[in-house]
Amino acid sequence: MAGKKKPGEIIVYFGCSMLGGYAAVSREEIARLHKRIAEMGYRLASDHQTQPGIIERESKLDPLLIHDRDYQWLLGSDVGIFEISNPSLGVGSEISDMICAGKPVLMLFKQGLEDRISSYIRGKVGSRYVCCPVECHAYRDANDAGDRIRTFIDAHCGKD
Image (cartoon, rainbow, N blue to C red; front, side, top):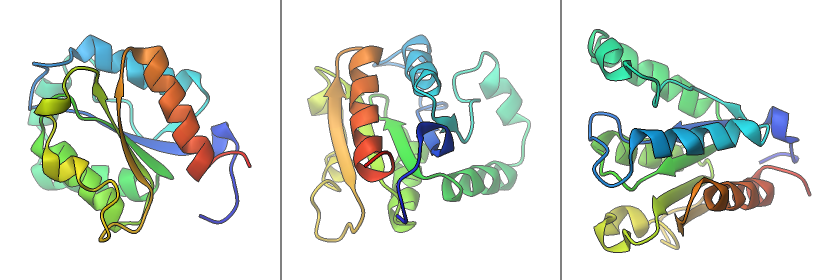
């Protein structure tokens, strides 16, 4: 990445389960992560994932429109932050798309769920086939996740 950016200049693509449900981590908990990213001064590529009624609104849209809209947000972002506690085919695809685009990716999951996280997704960390920064960490709460997000972004996009 050419040059470091200030927080307000950094665009974060945030991904989390939507149709996959919220069995392990509630929508409200994930919304706190989303809010924490904004509070740190980063720009979010989108903010719709945790809004009430989003599933109903998105279900009325053409899948091609959703893919192309989200893919455009993904390509326009500096970094991807993904909450992966709730399994989701879409989130796994977004993570792979970010990696293929060469963008830094941070995956977060709720502490205690290590055994429920996809080995394939977690295996991207350190893989010789992945040529961009990828990390995967457990977090206790939104503040702990926020610390991990700030550290990751500072290392790969932010201040020197």
